[in-house]
Length: 124
Length: 111
Image 1: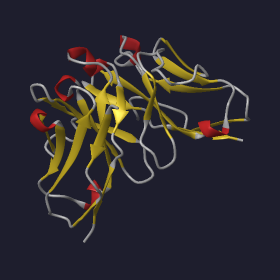
Image 2: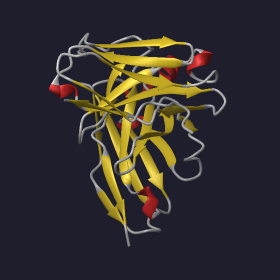
Image 3: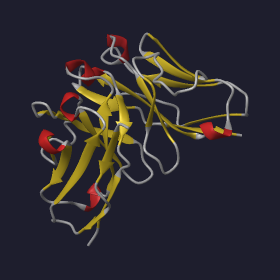
């Protein structure tokens, strides 16, 4: 079964750092793009950026450029999303998702497998 | 103003047909970029419903269909079921913003 399993819920204070994980299984992790999506409480989906684990080609949405860092370790089939200094406004559910298709074409094809989401709460 | 505009809500009775629109621009849908649709049930992760404007992944019932014309796309759901009650999102690329975007989402209520 193809699946993405995300790390557990986090409660942090403003200014703290955080690293979320997204582990893929059941497919060749290196060959599919991984997308990160934010959903703030009661709001819609926001595209944060995308990374290709095969060569770590990473493209950030301008809204998130400089705010987060995406990375991937293909040896352990895991993608990461990191903050160096959290703000209360970072409180949200974060989803990772896999591109439908492999390789370069996958960038354009939508995402078909989603992680269960990680809830991040930032509060003093 | 959103890059992709969806109606905030639609509703229909069981068995009826509803459509959800997704309006973009000449830089997004009108430029030929594909539209993808997702369903998000309450408290769950989104699920891919339609990719590449009209294609259904395996396992998605043929009650769901997608279309695209000009700068807009639509998701149609026929034979509405109570289980279709969810939020629906379109997604496309915008060449002016050089980024992917989701529409604001449409909440479907089955009366």
